[in-house]
Amino acid sequence: MAEDNQFKRNVAYKMRIGDILAGKVIMEGERFKSLDVQNKQVIRVNVIANVIEKYIQDAEKKYGSITIDDASGQIRLKVFGEDIEKFSQFNQGDTIIVIGLVRSWNNEVYITPEILKKKDPAFLLVRKLELEKENVKTIDKTQLLALKDKIIERVKAADADGGVNVDTLILELHEPPEIINQEIKKLLEDGIAYEPRPGKIRYLG
Image (cartoon, rainbow, N blue to C red):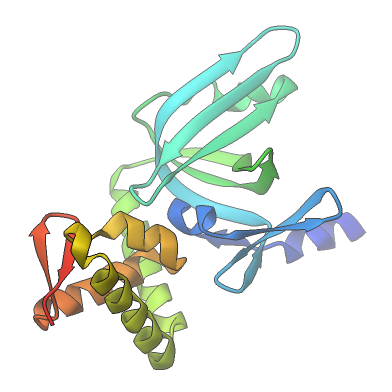
């Protein structure tokens, strides 16, 4: 009964892969404890993404991995032993929903899947919009202003290099990619920055 209660307490947070990868791994001794993502202690996640690679080792030591991508990043799902059967119905190009446990080993964050289901590709957009709304609600005006200042600071600093890549900003700032893109869009609209080419930002002042 205690195990059931523990299982229920570990909420499967709906997340984008980029946010998972930007999280901080929390260890308890040598054992993985949780992932700190936007001040949430994350143990289980709910992700919708496309399968881009699948590997099955059906030998004495059975092992399977599926790499998934949701346009914010890529992460691997890993299974061992008889659990490789969980991957049998999935192939490259499938859109799937994954509910599973976050794990970290050898500096790699991955997911041990509990539930896997095929989904219509349209669900990727539905999830993206859903998370954008949530992220806007969870970041207050003070945090947004601080984020805006950080973006401007980095854009100015990169002027000698012809600007900074949006992907670099997302990796360095450790904030939801949707919020960073939203603030960059505002800077472009306000004439504070411009795009010398798609995906690169320069300071205009």
